[in-house]
Image 1 (tube, rainbow, N blue to C red):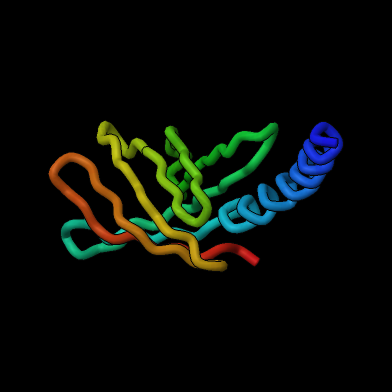
Image 2 (cartoon, rainbow, N blue to C red):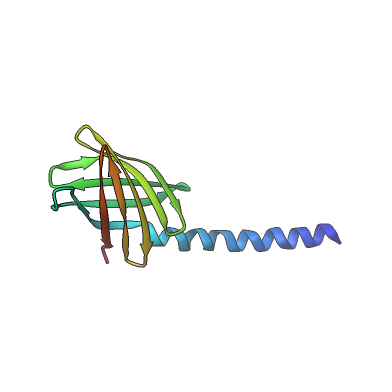
Length: 121
Protein backbone atom coordinates (compact mmCIF):
# COMPACT_ATOMS: atom_id res chain seq x y z
CA UNK A 1 0.00 0.00 0.00
CA UNK A 2 2.80 2.45 0.88
CA UNK A 3 4.56 1.72 -2.42
CA UNK A 4 1.36 2.42 -4.39
CA UNK A 5 0.91 5.76 -2.62
CA UNK A 6 4.55 6.65 -3.29
CA UNK A 7 4.18 5.81 -6.99
CA UNK A 8 1.06 7.98 -7.21
CA UNK A 9 2.91 10.90 -5.58
CA UNK A 10 5.90 10.51 -7.91
CA UNK A 11 3.62 10.38 -10.96
CA UNK A 12 1.78 13.51 -9.80
CA UNK A 13 5.09 15.32 -9.21
CA UNK A 14 6.26 14.40 -12.70
CA UNK A 15 3.14 16.02 -14.14
CA UNK A 16 3.44 19.22 -12.07
CA UNK A 17 7.19 19.95 -12.25
CA UNK A 18 7.47 20.47 -16.04
CA UNK A 19 4.50 22.85 -16.03
CA UNK A 20 6.03 24.89 -13.20
CA UNK A 21 9.39 25.12 -14.96
CA UNK A 22 7.77 26.29 -18.20
CA UNK A 23 5.74 28.96 -16.39
CA UNK A 24 8.88 30.37 -14.75
CA UNK A 25 10.84 30.18 -18.00
CA UNK A 26 8.24 32.26 -19.82
CA UNK A 27 8.77 35.18 -17.44
CA UNK A 28 12.41 35.82 -18.31
CA UNK A 29 12.91 34.04 -21.66
CA UNK A 30 12.80 36.39 -24.62
CA UNK A 31 14.33 39.55 -26.02
CA UNK A 32 14.47 42.60 -23.75
CA UNK A 33 15.15 46.26 -24.54
CA UNK A 34 17.25 47.50 -21.62
CA UNK A 35 18.27 50.95 -20.38
CA UNK A 36 20.87 51.49 -17.67
CA UNK A 37 21.33 54.86 -16.04
CA UNK A 38 24.97 55.95 -16.21
CA UNK A 39 26.77 57.79 -13.38
CA UNK A 40 26.86 61.01 -15.46
CA UNK A 41 23.06 60.98 -15.89
CA UNK A 42 23.04 59.46 -19.35
CA UNK A 43 21.60 56.20 -20.62
CA UNK A 44 23.26 53.01 -21.86
CA UNK A 45 20.91 51.04 -24.11
CA UNK A 46 21.32 47.38 -25.00
CA UNK A 47 19.32 44.28 -25.86
CA UNK A 48 19.33 41.22 -23.62
CA UNK A 49 18.31 37.89 -25.15
CA UNK A 50 17.55 35.10 -22.66
CA UNK A 51 17.03 31.49 -23.73
CA UNK A 52 16.23 28.26 -21.90
CA UNK A 53 17.69 25.21 -23.64
CA UNK A 54 18.63 21.77 -22.35
CA UNK A 55 17.59 22.77 -18.83
CA UNK A 56 19.90 25.80 -18.73
CA UNK A 57 19.39 29.53 -19.03
CA UNK A 58 21.77 31.42 -21.31
CA UNK A 59 21.92 35.08 -22.30
CA UNK A 60 23.60 37.39 -24.74
CA UNK A 61 23.67 41.17 -24.65
CA UNK A 62 24.15 43.39 -27.64
CA UNK A 63 24.46 47.01 -28.70
CA UNK A 64 24.98 48.72 -32.05
CA UNK A 65 28.70 48.30 -31.31
CA UNK A 66 28.51 44.50 -30.93
CA UNK A 67 27.87 41.82 -28.34
CA UNK A 68 28.91 41.79 -24.69
CA UNK A 69 29.80 38.65 -22.75
CA UNK A 70 27.13 37.64 -20.22
CA UNK A 71 27.90 35.09 -17.54
CA UNK A 72 26.86 33.74 -14.17
CA UNK A 73 23.20 33.96 -15.19
CA UNK A 74 20.95 32.94 -12.30
CA UNK A 75 17.17 32.72 -12.51
CA UNK A 76 15.15 32.23 -9.33
CA UNK A 77 11.50 32.78 -10.22
CA UNK A 78 11.21 36.49 -11.06
CA UNK A 79 14.67 37.33 -9.64
CA UNK A 80 17.45 37.34 -12.21
CA UNK A 81 21.13 38.17 -11.87
CA UNK A 82 24.05 38.09 -14.27
CA UNK A 83 27.46 39.55 -14.96
CA UNK A 84 28.40 41.50 -18.07
CA UNK A 85 31.67 42.94 -19.30
CA UNK A 86 31.73 46.32 -21.02
CA UNK A 87 35.18 47.35 -22.17
CA UNK A 88 37.54 46.24 -19.42
CA UNK A 89 34.98 46.57 -16.61
CA UNK A 90 32.88 43.76 -15.13
CA UNK A 91 29.35 44.62 -13.96
CA UNK A 92 26.85 42.76 -11.81
CA UNK A 93 23.18 43.16 -12.67
CA UNK A 94 20.24 42.18 -10.43
CA UNK A 95 16.70 42.57 -11.72
CA UNK A 96 13.14 41.60 -10.80
CA UNK A 97 10.85 40.61 -13.67
CA UNK A 98 7.21 41.67 -13.49
CA UNK A 99 5.27 40.51 -16.54
CA UNK A 100 6.77 42.16 -19.61
CA UNK A 101 8.97 44.62 -17.68
CA UNK A 102 11.79 44.52 -15.18
CA UNK A 103 13.59 46.89 -12.84
CA UNK A 104 16.81 46.51 -10.93
CA UNK A 105 20.31 47.71 -10.16
CA UNK A 106 23.72 47.34 -11.72
CA UNK A 107 27.13 47.83 -10.11
CA UNK A 108 30.74 47.69 -11.21
CA UNK A 109 33.95 49.31 -10.11
CA UNK A 110 32.98 52.30 -7.98
CA UNK A 111 29.76 52.93 -9.94
CA UNK A 112 26.17 51.74 -9.72
CA UNK A 113 22.78 52.70 -11.05
CA UNK A 114 19.29 51.66 -12.01
CA UNK A 115 18.34 49.45 -14.92
CA UNK A 116 14.96 48.79 -16.49
CA UNK A 117 13.71 46.83 -19.43
CA UNK A 118 10.73 45.81 -21.49
CA UNK A 119 10.14 42.56 -23.32
CA UNK A 120 9.56 42.37 -27.06
CA UNK A 121 6.05 41.19 -27.91
